[in-house]
Amino acid sequence: MQTLSVDIGGTHVKASVLGPRGRMIHERIQADTPHDLTPRGLVEIIAGLAERLPHYDRVSAGFPGVVHDGVVRTAANLGTKRFAGFNLERALAKRLGAPARVCNDADMQGLGVIRGRGVEMVITLGTGFGTALFQNGRLAPHLELAHHNFRHDRTYEDELGDAALKRVGRATWMRRLVDAIAALRALTSFDHLYVGGGNSRLVKLRLPRDITVVDNSAGILGGVRLWRHGSEEARQQTRRKR
Ligand code: BGC
Image (cartoon, rainbow, N blue to C red; front, side, top):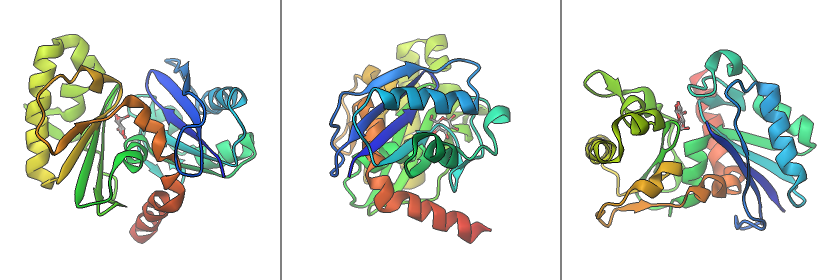
């Protein structure tokens, strides 16, 4: 069983094919994310990447926004107006001819890196600020902490997204990150925090033992676990809400 795994980001769409245990069997490839990306355009970019990769039996994709039952609800950095209501899961399954599952990008990244013990939190530092929370390996309901107030009437994403990094520079951004981690620790009492995303490579701090920086390729490693439980739980939670 091989899984085409896709990490949809604000600057790049990355993909690889994972073997049955979640290992990449081909190097990760990527395409640029255009500024005016449309839902159909996104599906075509993914189809183009898929053509350059080995055979797959199913598709997993992490999307940078809220996704319920495969349908996009928000897309802060790609354009909620264009994407809200788009059934990305169905569109990918149809275009790629294989069953597909889509979840939030940070949730998918988390599924790839957590150890399954205690309260584990994942933050991703990229165009946006992604978060995911797990308890003993079970995915918690997705919280959009990115757009929640962090301080000074500004959200975590306002303070720590890529635009903020470019605006204030690395040193200030890093100080903000330290404060944000303290706030998230107080909020969740995490046993372990994983820091991923493209800008995590800039994090050159002496970190306590309960914080690990993970490679950006982790964004796609959750593609296999998504089929085992992550999405199922996300689905049940959505159903319960209705
Ligand atoms: C979105 C999140 C996403 C994060 C990282 C935020 O702007 O609202 O859903 O996980 O960016 O891509």
